[in-house]
Image 1: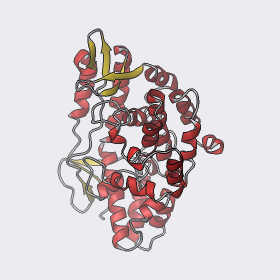
Image 2: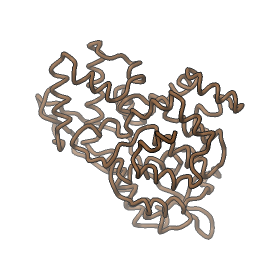
Image 3: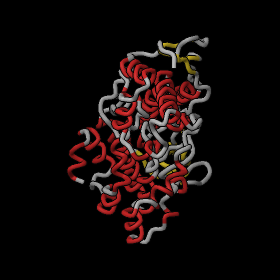
Image 4: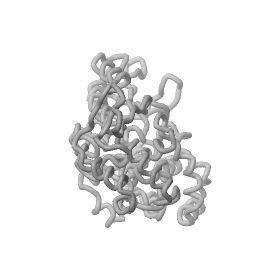
Length: 352
């Protein structure tokens, strides 16, 4: 485990230390070390966009780092093993290029099509099942993190998952909007509160810190729905479809191979259009956009992308309220994300 932690970017190491000042709990280390979890080291949280020059990610952030971060947040606030392990496992069924495969499955709006495999991935791991049996934990208690509101809840509420990817993406995994000290300031201001429905939820003690979080969150969330992002995810999905149609890759390999191994398959395949188009996308520095369909080009439109935003609770004298209800600035930033409009089409100069 020590060797793995040394291998990840120093910013992520420091980020983990903020999330759990006492370190990674020993029981969690054993689950992290299982082969099924270690496979996640080879999958980027950027859904494959990191491989194109259109994006300027500061460092590699894998699905494993994200999952560990979520688990540490859950542990920090609950000290509950079952909830923490459920948080760790929530992306265990993640395939290469992450949510890109949801696009391949036609699920670009909710981006949940791969989650149904979580139980199977856990059951198929003799190492994980042995640990669960030893710890007297039933698979039903860890296979679905949605049952624990601190781990996950409905958007736009604040959960460990939503907090985890927003903070980590915001220190450079996607875009740099916060320093590590600002992350510490934001994180230490969070507590467990009770929302409008009487359900536990993460929220802020201080309005100013909540506003700072929403400001950074809005910048991160915009990247998720930019045309360059959505285009790239659709392009990679279409590449995978084409490879599957030509029997160059099978569905199981999306869950077994690393992204580098899949990229090697793409770049060394015998179909020139796949190789050439992938090379164009890799070296493109910006996307082209249009309000009308551009003929004889790979031109795509994503009608309903998943809008990721957070409207957190804030402690007030009379209880807990959404930041949008007490801050005009935060309310405007949230509304801007919700109603963000791209040009209708995005394209590059090749025909698939």
